Image (cartoon, rainbow, N blue to C red; front, side, top):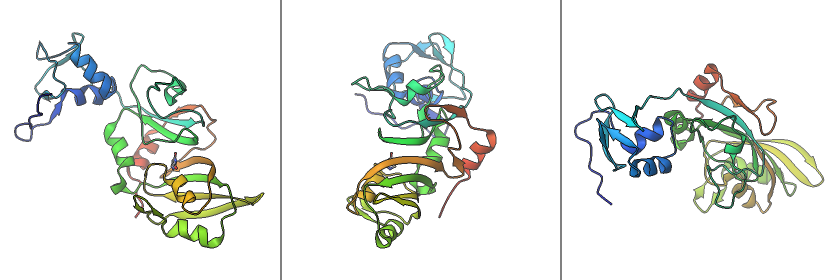
Length: 250
Ligand code: URA
């Protein structure tokens, strides 16, 4: 593999691979394979190096001979059912969230991940900056989950969830927790966290000696799942996109 050279000066340079994936045409893996296949030309010459620097203000990038156009931004809210992977393709052929999208014409990627067994609100977009804004832990964008635990959690345990639970990757940040109901010796509660660590809610509940029986994301910042049925999608409104970009909890 050739070493990636740094771009000269501070012109708006991006690698060819990033230019393609950011245009919303494909995933980064697909971009690399299209580049390797010689389908991409820069200023009329085929470039097979995915790390080739491109200056979007000066260079003409063509895909199969056609100039690359910046794609319209798309923001979809998907109500992910359980049993669907948040991944583009599964080697074992299991259903993925892409099977639920109205079309695969544009490459959309998920804003964060939900586990196979988690349902609820998932945003799909081709806007990488927007996705970064919602997932970068520095922005503290709150995510709310409805949780059914396998046992009754007493007030001390609920307080531990609120104040921070020690996990193998460090203590969790303060969380908002509200009890919803107690039924059949099981606690149902709502938790709002401002981090997005892997399997975080499940691990927090496991740290208390219980298990998560059901987990559904109901909100990201000001955006709520509302009455969108499981498996369905809808476009976000301009106001919702704006409100999400402004969402922050300290
Ligand atoms: N926390 C989890 O444990 N799983 C999810 O899917 C989301 C948050």
